[in-house]
Each structure stands twice: as C-alpha cells, then as structure tokens.
Image (cartoon, rainbow, N blue to C red; front, side, top):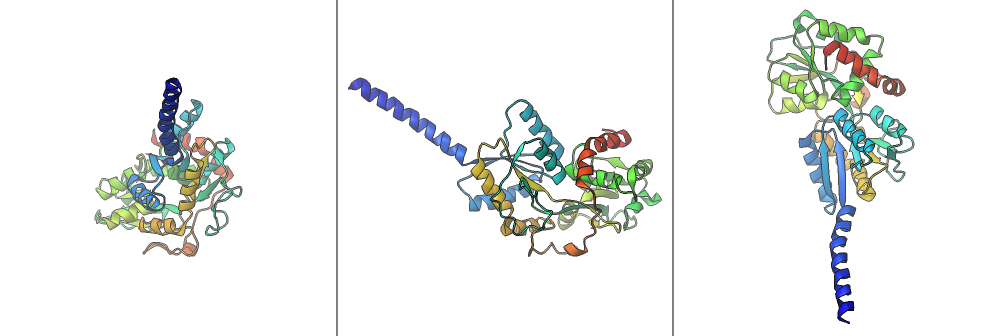
Length: 329
C-alpha cells in the first residue's frame, strides 16, 4: 500500500509539473514583426486587454532580418514563430509558395477591400503604408513636389534612402520604381550620381533628416508624420507621380505551435479596434469605414504607382543585387 501511495504521489507531482507548462504553451504566442517596437508595445497592450490569457513573445527587426531569422530556423528544423506581421505581400507570397504558411479560413475579411488579402486566406493586409519624400523644413531647401526633384542641384549630397538589403518596404519601393518605365534603374543611378546615399531601414532616414544631416529622404509616410508630431522640423510629401505602397500583411506559420492564440491575434489585427489604433499611429487604414489620419489624402485620392506582384517577387534578389552594386552594401 505504501508503494502504491508513493507511485500515486509521484504521478500527481509529474502531472502538476506538466499541466502548467501545457497551459502556458496553449496561452503563448510567438510573434515575428517588422513594425516598430514602440508601436508594437501599444498594439500588444490593446491585444492584452482583449486576451489577457495570452502571453506574447516578440522578435522585432527589419523585414529582411526577420525573414533571414525565420529561414535559418526553418533550415535548422526549428522554426519558432507562430505569426508573422511584416512589410509586404510579395514576401508573404514567397513564403506561401515555399509552403511555410497555413490558411486561416475562418478569418473575417468583411472589412477588407478585395485585393488586400490572399484569395486562399494565407495572409491578410492590415494597413496601407506608402513611400514618399521627407524633407527638413529648417534646412533652407526647396519643398519637393516630385521624385525628379531629388535629382535637382539643390538636392546634391542631400538625399538618403532606406536599403532593400534591410527594409521590406524599400524592396517594394525600389523594385516598383525600377520596373516603371518613367524611372527604371537609370533613376537610381542618377540619384547616386547626385550624391544620394543608402542608410539601413526607414528609421535611419528619419533620424538623418530630423537631425539635419540630410535635407531629403525617401521614407514610409507614418515615420515622417510621427516625427513631425514630436516637434522635429520635418514634413512629408506625396510626390506628383505617385507613391509606392505595401499593406503590412499578417500570416500564421504552418509550423505554428500555438494556432488558437495565433488565430486570436489575426482576428484582432483584422478588427476595427486595431484599424482605429493604427490611425493613431499615423497609418493609412485599409479597412472600410475607418478615417485616415488628419492631413492625409482620402484613399480614393491617393495616387499609387502600380506594380505586378509576380514581377516584384521574381525580381527581388536582382533588386537587392543591383541596388548594392550602385550604393554598396
């Protein structure tokens, strides 16, 4: 009897040790994202209000570094992320083609316009992010109106841009411009000849222009408007030819260990509450019925430089190589 009691006690102890771990695994979410850390702190705080039972572990870096980390983990047979929230649908399409994502057929896409999510529901756009021009209003330089203005003598040695070797938005911007006959690679060669340089991500562009180290920068719009709101002498221009755009999609990894928590986070990102929060962070909302931030053009007035997603996907590596050949990296 004493032996049976001892075995029962050992079994009970083992069960008590395993149960919290199993519970923790079920209530945990591993998120890989390229969205800035300060914004993600706000996002996760709102998510936590709705799902206090879910613990979130986050890795944040530029899209290229996020994808490099993921691919290294996949190659090692140990992918860690449950959810990806990164810059662009082209990168997500590539992951889908590699069979690294799983569909979420139950996702509510009723607030999303057609074309802003994968038809098979492997990934979903969460917000619109455009790339235009930031400039320092205290630098005594002309206010730019066009992409061509960055080639002017007044802009010589005064332009900085993000590198596609680091930024997913920059990959889309450079590839879109390079594939547009109005610009092509000749435009980037002219920029380099005029003294333009490449930083790392969009944050490096923001900081250089805000500090007055450069007068002009190529940047995603919310970073410029956020910096302006903080009191920096900067402003943002939507160039007359149009802007390039991404929609920061979200997806669940095929190897996700915490699928229910991942689905809860996707549901949250596709909610009106999350869309309205994104407006307070200076993003264009892509959801119906959500008003853009003050000072932004209406979505129907936004001029976007169109690009074929298949072409962009196929040209990604060439885009990075040719950019590096021109600007180094």
